[in-house]
Length: 196
Image (tube, rainbow, N blue to C red; front, side):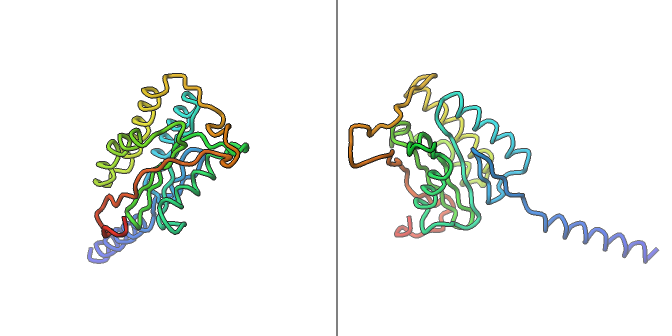
């Protein structure tokens, strides 16, 4: 009796340790890179499908990238790197918007091509998802980001937007879009005023 009780406790401890050691898997696709592991595979696949569908319907990329530890020197630089990597169509034109979230630094950054999103749109977009980030509801934040981005694109550009191939075609000095970007935001309150 005592041996079976101890064996059951040991089995329970092993199961708990296994459950704790299994972390969310990294998910990477053309529209979603969840390296921080915020989402389950099912959540990531569903969100990825929604991002792809919205992007194709609106002829503009809507993407999300997360990291455990920031790979660049700042949220702005890292978001820009992901933006370039995911959105480059091969002709130097980068149509779209990207939300970058870093787990360790509790920061996010939004970057977008300025022919798609302006500062007012990005501010409205942030208002939709930041409360979810503050509550550590990443799926809620990502869904709010997607739905608000979709609504803003339709509101500002119509349901069948026709974005110019290159908004700087008259300029000899700028060859591609210059990302319009939001502020670095410390949604958990860990950074000092100088760091944000």
